[in-house]
Structures are given as structure tokens and as C-alpha cells.
Amino acid sequence: MAVTATPVVIFASFYIAWAYTSRAWRKHKNHGVLTRSMSVGVLHGGKLALERLIDYHHARADETYLAAAEIELKDLLQEAHPDFKKLQRTVAKLEMSGKEAEAVTILDKALENAQNENKQHEAYEIQMLREEMLIYKGDFEKALHCKCLDEEDISDARRPLYKAIINVILEQPKEAFSNWGQFNQMRSNFLWPPDQQDAQLYEVIDDFDQFVNVVNLLKRDIQETSKRKNK
Image 1 (cartoon, rainbow, N blue to C red):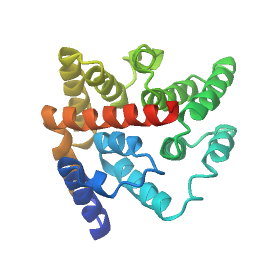
Image 2 (image 1 turned 180 degrees about the vertical axis):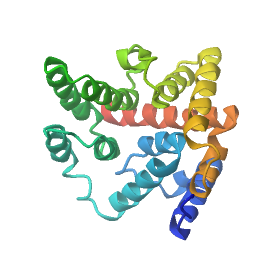
Image 3 (image 1 turned 135 degrees about the vertical axis):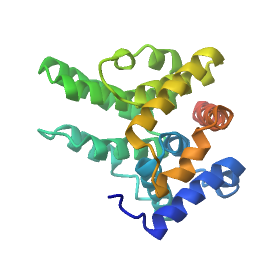
Image 4 (image 1 turned 90 degrees about the horizontal axis):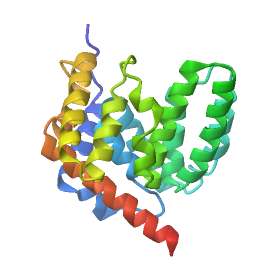
């Protein structure tokens, strides 16, 4: 039996969907807290989008909220059985503080250790975390050719999602549409019919033009962040 979504969750889902379709988000943007991971959270949908909304508002309210994320990432990766849900949330905090390059360096080292110890599942999950950080860094070609995106035997909707995001950014419309379609199909297999808390976000990405709009906002945020860092 489906669990009824709480009013807070439903309201947050409406809020995220409305904010991205109207771009009201930018009117209240705190330039000390970056929002690229919010865009990817919206494209993911569901609980991930809500978690990133919560973290974003915590970060806006408390400047120290993101300070420990780098240490937290290292500690989580050193656990015998890493919690990759926690890791996904932690790397988003590093993005919000503009430390995606540091995240890639940490993840590279963890990936090397996992591969040396023949921990294939951990190596794959670390690569997927690294994939998202490479997108935020603007290393699109490198991200597009990561080995993890070719693991066709693993049912993981992130693969076609990240491919579609990169395709849109690199202006590859045919490939983007194909990968977006595969992403939507995989999401449908796992989440169909969408529950109440996911339905509002699903509407944002269920239309290819809307998907492209969100990715283009993400692209602009990546470019603006890169310009600020290079000044």
C-alpha cells in the first residue's frame, strides 16, 4: 500500500516544480550558496530533490552548514560499507560551497582504492558520484566518456540522465532526446505510477522541452560559476 505523502513533502514538490518553471528561484538566490546540484536534483525528482531543497535552505540560513562537507565525504568513504545515499547528499553540499574540484580529487583516490581491492559495486557508485561533480566542473567531454556510463548491464537511471544532460549542454539534440527517453522509461519502470510527492516534479521532466530548459539553466549556472572562479 502506498504511503501518503506529508503536507510538507507535497508543498516542497509543488514549490520546486513552480520555482524551476517560473525561475523564481533566481530572484532570491544567495550567491554564496551555489544551486547547480538543485537543478540536477529536480531532474532526478523525488526524495533527492527534496533533500537538496532542505540542504540549500539550511546553507542559506547558516554559513557554517557546508563547512564540514569535505571532512564528511572523506569519513563516509573510509567506512567498511559506505552509505551511498549519504554520500550523494554530501557531494551536493560540496557543490553548493563551490568545492566540486576537491570532491573529484577525493573521489579519484577512493575510486583507485576500491578498484585495487576489487570492490566493483563501490567503484561503480564512486564513479557515478564523480560523474556529477565533473558536470559541475564543466568537464563535459571527460564526463561523457566515463566508463560508468557504459555499464549497460546495470539498471541505473542516472546513466541516461547524465548522458542526456551532457548531450544538451554540448548541443547534441538527437543523442539528448534518445537518452532522455531512456531515462524516462527507466524512471517509469521504477516509479510508475508516480506517487503524490513525485508527481509535480515528474511534470517538469516528462516534457523534453522542459527538460532542456532546466539543463540550460544548469549550463548557465556552471558557466557563471566558472567565470567567477577565474576572475
